[in-house]
Length: 317
Image (cartoon, rainbow, N blue to C red; front, top):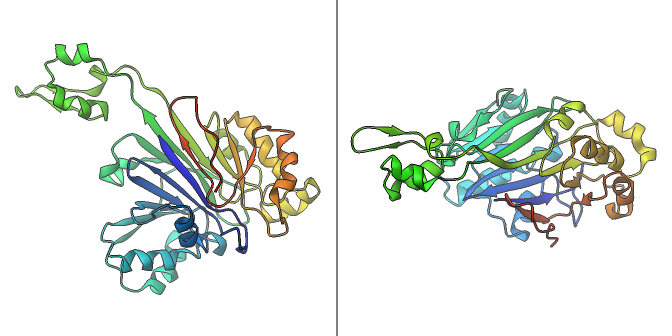
């Protein structure tokens, strides 16, 4: 299962009830932070989310409302004695954007590695050994005023374990969990048993898409196909602001909803609301007339995604 928490839902400037963009994803003690706008640390504390064990920070682009929370967060990590390495990824320009951020932080007691995801993504075990081989992160090109990308996160679900096949191969029960996690097992006689010899075909896993800032684009729709959750920017609520949204590389509520319909996603969370919207819920009908299950995100809103189709509604703080 995967826990998703919206930490910030504001665009451009923070408001008393809305921090700037940040989304926290965690499962099995592992976690990713998508963007890190101003107010991320405070929002995390309010939402009872620990950022200390964040393994990877995935930035969508380098506008201030998506990265100005980084210097403070990295310094907090250092003050609290973090020694685990941290990876930061983002689109082209990562090194130039992070140079002043890291200079502001000064000396840190942990390493910070800057990494560009390849076009076809990576198994996160290739970056972070303790993640195992069950998760994948792929960059999604998006359409904003600057170089930008969203992210497609996938959690693989292995096939069913076959105890009879394990017994036939002479695999001790204490080693079954290794095979279930996708690792081979070496028997006392040197024989190597691969997971695919014991497990059935992969079952449907979980897929989450985070758009970052973008105008409507086909690459995002394609990546989000059948996703369990699409977290999509919806900077402008009213359709009358579509020209302004296009000018600045953003979406309206209805445009985000149309992408959700085209992609046939299960859930749509709208976020990144302009400060001109006092109450985003007032504009929700623009989205719901197209995608009835659309939800306005709020800071601290969270959901636990499970493999079962019987999932709870998001919890609002």
